Length: 67
Image (cartoon, rainbow, N blue to C red):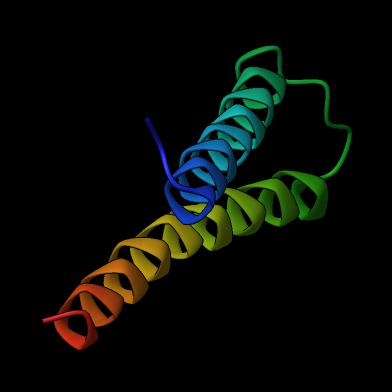
């Protein structure tokens, strides 16, 4: 049985990954008319990837406090 915190973490990670996948799909179909649009989407992907890393770091910090 998952705790609320574990369920939240799981769902958040799933949503973040879905966003990354959606953005990558938009890159694959090259629906952009300007280079700035492409760079913006690349920045969004990088930001979501960083968010995933921050979630992992926060979990590690929280686990240390639970000991």
